[in-house]
Image (tube, rainbow, N blue to C red; front, side, top):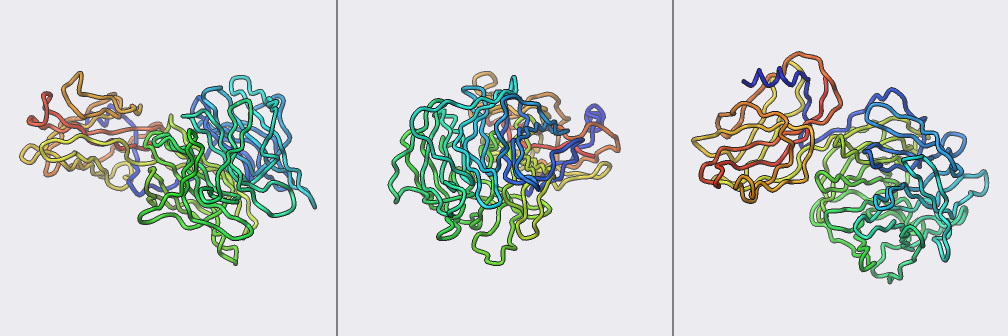
Length: 462
């Protein structure tokens, strides 16, 4: 029956392990090399990139990535080219938003005190008419969109084009007006440029990490901003955390509830050679190093999450030590998510071996199966679910489905629920998302006689 299932799927599958790796994508088309561009995920799940610094100056281009190709998007009302800013998506208003940025000059830079929005249904830019105060024009600032309080949050940045004195101000924009938040220095991240920021929907707060105060140096501190009380709190991190860095980027993985940080340069390395290739996850309390593998350390890249494909997408950036700008696209498919429910032998835990090749054996393990039974089924799905409670309908109290039940495998048996498959040497579509969750036979657990594991995310490949 296992062979029958694989024949029915008729695809070659490569599975990411907990130690996920970045994979360089080969899109059919791609933007040119650039750094300091801005990126966000739109309503369709595509990644949208604006601007950035090209070899001979900034660009006003808008590009859209659907997982297969980059497309140059014709826009109207387009603002002047600029770089070193962020783009966010406001789901309440249905528009992308951005503020500030810079057009580098030979002696002086042009810094923009402008607030813009982009409608992704018509690809029309509109400059917001703002009455009252504004941040005053900054670049190298950091931005996130607080979806709980419907606010664009901006912190720090370089407020002019020449004197290197960073801002310590935090501003919020509600779609109409800017408000500077009065925060005492003791509870303020302080003057910073090139910090990384991400709104963590799971805890309802904006996360800020790293950055540099050019008058003092870099930092490895983690701060949380509450958009309801408008207060910053420095978080004391137990255990490991990323090194101090500047120019790193961070985006929120809504499927697994973590902010993912990548790239940056070591601001405390006087040689200027230390550029990072690592990646870290922040779950709201702790940091975990999870991936390496991007060729060429870089800063001022873009990163955005594609929920439709369960991918982090990183594009562009620069290495200031080698004077190289990048035009490459990297993707990282992010492993396990969700949680299982307790049964007679604890909570079932689903895991996989390293990434297999077509025609080679691959092992799936479900720890927590009931001794003496060691049986269950695997649910294969193409859509991630938000955690549907299986108690009311099936009597599986405390159990949640995270995978759409598109296909169900044959019964698995074996010590500890571990078994191997050999993937058939067949060609098929690649690049799509595939998900697994295990149902474990446990007659004593609940009325339905089953418990369920966490879910595992899979990458279709050759």
